[in-house]
Image 1 (spheres, rainbow, N blue to C red):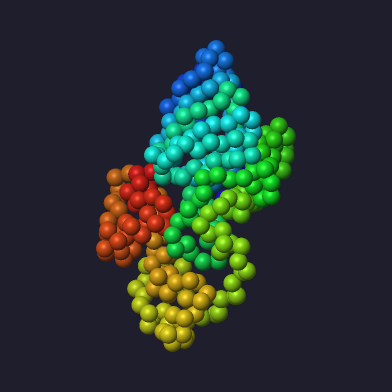
Image 2 (tube, helix red, strand yellow):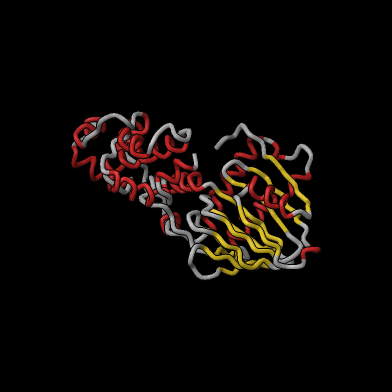
Length: 326
């Protein structure tokens, strides 16, 4: 998290379709926007706050509209406060969002909003995928073996779902508070982390049972020693014997300790850390300055097909998609 930044607020009111398109594209994604209802009723009112890895906003159009988005590359949650909308992800069946039932969008599917009621007022939250994965790893205390799979609906009528939606709405209310708490970098950073933690505890996904389980026992010093060294020097050549030497235990003892406390072998952990570094380098590369294969080879991945499959399982997108978005 970047705790040296303050929250940035933006407000738009316009009757222009083109200005509406530009405002949405500036904060969310490029899109095709079509007015399906009475053109004379079209009036966009949109408020947005940038919280780093999250963009929180609310929007109304005053009439029925339709929208088409490419693969957003972000997680996205739409929470109707009034009215509702129907959305299709790729070739899947329509999802219907209404007051109390939010939609959780997958970041790697084409999004088509096929119905948006004239009275629809929606809280809309864009979430950086990598930031959410890192937060999930922090809560679990271990690297993710594969990317989480989220259910398409999220209940915001009660419990953690309602609390999360209320907190997201509060961040928008702060735009009218001069010198408010959210304009303090410390508070902005903590709110960002709380919203990331909150959605992982409010939404249904493939790691919910693991989050609900009792916390694992503290890792032994031998495991922590190896993890710290690998995190500090991931490019060093490692094998099981060297890792056991770093841990000051036998290979068999270290293998069992990693299995119990990390959920994978020591060499698998090395691979996971290197995979993360590949992603960091791809995201930081200027277009045309490198290739996926060059970066993969640099970090020791020589079987490109196997590497690409693992990368997509881990991050929910292909390495080339990450590089193109850099």
